[in-house]
Image (cartoon, rainbow, N blue to C red):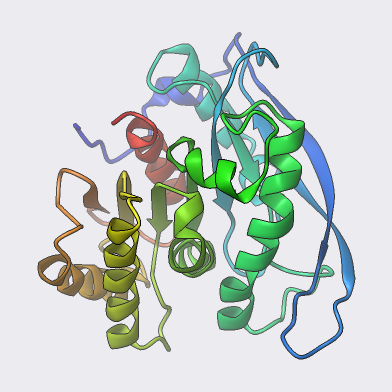
Length: 284
């Protein structure tokens, strides 16, 4: 794949084949261990490509925001993300797909412990969000959200996120729900500045080894960062040390670490990461 270091200008121009973004609400629970479950009512935004047709089956990407913001980030706070998606699909740069932007926060509280909420989101993701979305929208699950069918259709499901959402990509989707996703896009970081690199390396290797034993191959892990990003050093160190230890991870086959020269921790970089990720996801 030929990487670029800025989203092409034509991707930012209004597209006459525009998709739509709609609100989706669902019920979930706190799932706190040792505590009584509390019910929650939450929302996400869903991007449907131009010409969305319920008689067709679409690949689906679950896409997360970073810390201290909400599910509004990708599509509402930065509507040019939608323009980029519209143009990519219209130009045949990627296939039409459904993209869901939820939040790992609960009850609108943006001050919860970051490590806890990113890891703990895996239960809501598996038990409530994916089943609700893939019952309602036309994905390869075909409205059959039994655990077996969601596992069987994992190669049509991707997960990506920026910053704290990148940490969530590892913790909630990769470590804890590897059987439901085959494509991953951690954009800016793995464990954060306080994380234990040795623990993350071990978890990545164990997840892929266990997945191989179960006949669940990784389709692609597309790590991204800018070399001036505050999360670059820890992300780079972890993945560079994983690579020689993990035979299931093969550079340029099912893994790459894309770096923007001079790139920082901002939306310009994250939109560029998404632009590249969608050219890889669901293609192999």
